[in-house]
Length: 155
Image (cartoon, rainbow, N blue to C red; front, top):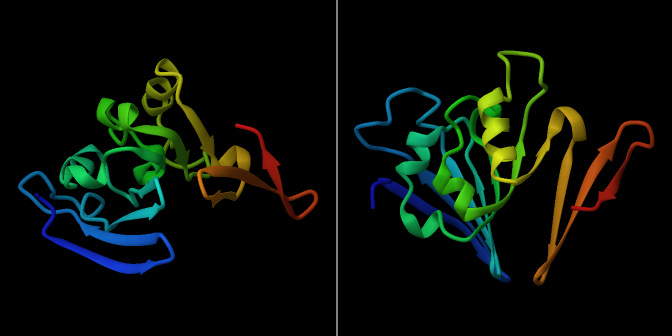
């Protein structure tokens, strides 16, 4: 294992939240040092990459990278935040961005997702995104500013 500080902060009713501190020789920038959140509900794993990039992801122990249902991409979908291992280990990606500053999400990130036929959601298009897990099923909701409600989205 590479990550130095891994702390399970919640474990109740089949729901586990773990905080992972990325460390290692390749972890240098403040963005790369962002704390990663791994959530597990029954057989579904979610990984929230904060502002981390591929090097941050590589520093995470393998047991937190396998069978990921959703990855919230690091650093608003910037360049070098998604790699082939992430593509192969996840079903859905969320890009949290407003789409206006710093060219995020980066075209390279979108190209990788689309070339690999991966589903992704963007907060600049879909507003707030709510994921509801219930046993082995899930539902995705998008916030509608017009109705001021979350509306279910088929995916």
